[in-house]
Image (cartoon, rainbow, N blue to C red; front, side, top):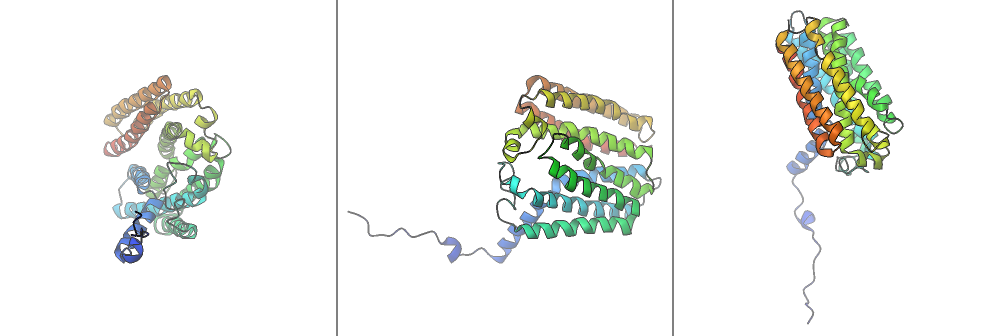
Length: 307
C-alpha cells in the first residue's frame, strides 16, 4: 500500500536562514580567498628582505609603510587577476570553486575591491614612501595584468614574461629603503626571476590537463611529454645555483648565506633533475615543495647574514 506521507522539499534554509554573523564570516572568507593571502605573504617576505638589505640604516617605520603599500597592491592585483580569469577558472577543477566562478561573489564586487586595493597600494607607496617605489610597483601591476594574464592563452613565453613582475618585489623594497636603483637590486631580481621559472613550470606540469581545458598555452600543455618543460627547469635551476651565490660576491650577505644558498641551490637542482628523469606528477610536486622551501630560506638567510 502506498504511503500517504508526502516527501516535503528541504526548506531548512528558508525556515532557519543563516544568521547575519554566519553570512558575514562566509563573505569575509570569500574576499580573503580572492586576494590569495599566502601569495601576499611570500611577496612581502621578499619585499621586506629587499628593504632590509637595501637600507644602510633601517628605518622600521618606512619599512612598515613599504609593506603596507606592497601588500595592498599585491592583494589587489591577485584579486583583479581572478576577475579577469573568472571564465577560464570555471573550466578548471583546481579553480572552479573560487568565489567568482562558483558564483559566491559578484564580478563587479571583485573588480571594485581589486581596483581599490591596487590603486590604494600604488598611491600609498608613491606618496608615503617614495616615487621610485611607486613606479616599480606600477610596473608589476601593468606587466602582470596586461601582459602576463592575456598572454597565457597565446604563447608559452608567458612564463618568462610573468616572471618579471614576480621578481620585482625585492626591488620595490630596495628602492623604498635606498631611494635609488643599484646593481645589487638587480641581483635580487635575477634570483627571484630564475626561481620563478621552475616553480611556475612545476605547477603547470601538475595541472597541465586543467590548463589545456582552459586554453592556456603553457609549455607542458603544448608539449605534454614534459621533455621541453624539464629541460627548461634544469637549465634555470643550474643558472639559479650560480646566480644565487652573487649576493656574497656583491657583499650583500656573508659566508653563512653563501653556503646556505649553495646547498639550497644544489638541492633544488637535484629535485629538478629527478623530475626530468621521472616525468611524473609526484616528482613535479616535490619540485614545487622544494621551490617553496628555497625562496624563504634563501631570502631570510640573506637578511640575517647581511654585511
